[in-house]
Length: 223
Image (cartoon, rainbow, N blue to C red; front, side, top):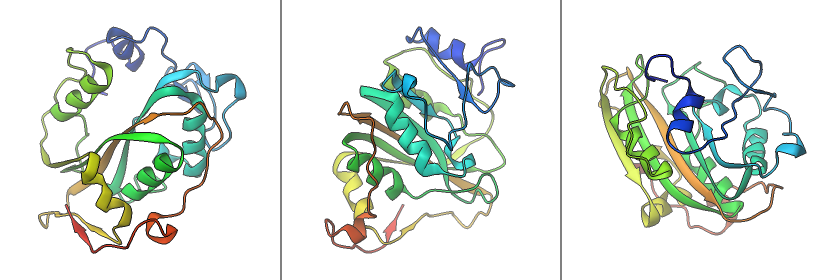
């Protein structure tokens, strides 16, 4: 993260509201206070403990993303918010996976979440992601006027925001084509937020919407 000098992510979150901030990792090398492998079920003592979960580019590095999503659902309390930032295109070998929007839409809809926002962002892949638009997302989630990130010198080449009825075509789309401007150095990430509406910690596995019978398969979507 591009934080002010001598600041940690924990300091950042505490400065904008939450007074209890935990970090989870495989080890304590980067200051995590909870050591856990997200490929394994989360301990029951942590169930429904959190009002916000931030996956700031973690899930793609876990071999079992299904378990990661199940863990997020277990960790979140009712009305809690999950915020994902993950690769969806042209991040070959960055992690085990790149994801499709229908993964997030399907899982969170199946498990009774309100889908708040989905943003598809194109940027120069040799640069890091944090940019002015992400401050706007965090401000919406945290209701904070403070900027959360210093702005590095790179440019986002596209930013497509979808919410409400704009999301419906993504449930049924057979394929999504991203306008890469024929530049092989542009990579794409998804920024996704959803709110948990239930108190249930057990997760249901969705069927991809175009095979569920709930949606009529649509044509290709260009974004």
